[in-house]
Length: 259
Image 1 (cartoon, rainbow, N blue to C red):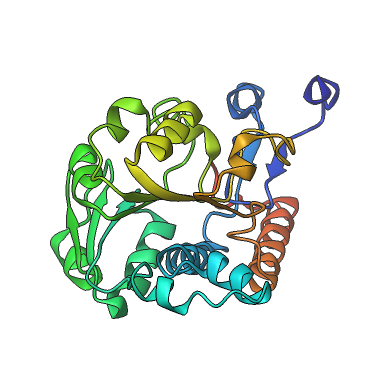
Image 2: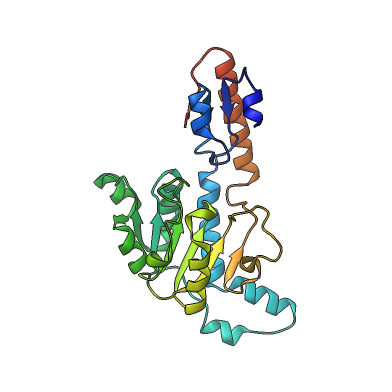
């Protein structure tokens, strides 16, 4: 193990929000401080979720490919493309990213629902126009659900066959958090039986995924290369904040954003 050979290690700074690639418990047992950058890409992820939602609702990928191939599908799209306005949008995890998403959904005139272990106070809910529901209600009432919880023991396979069996038929599922939060076999089955009408995935169990992974070829899944939070602006903020925290530690200060 590489970490065992680093006897002088005292501090690890992740240049990312996620830190599930580190053995945090082992590091803590050794007295090593671990910090992440939890909020530098929240805007980018929130914008990404809205982008893929609109792409799915408006059938952008199909419209683009058909038009490029000389096939005029205007009549077909007139009866199969949909607006975001008026939909029920569920947010699973109302942390930094979830709140940014809720904030950006306000102008779209949706009904925003959310589930989190910690409920927002009344003022925050009113400002975001969000209503608290149970996890099961979130899937039963929403037209779209976007996942924004961290990966840990309690969230692994959180979205499983049992939960999806209670979902509103035709639900659109978006995952820009971690792949392991969604049970892969349950996801594929829900797409096949119509419980899910579509999914947008930005994260995978193996990255990059195997080219033969059925998720990559599924016609109802919009796939992107784990870049929801990767914009020029977000990367700049991450670099600045990570470096500032390293300098703080080197100057004898206490690092911020410890996990």
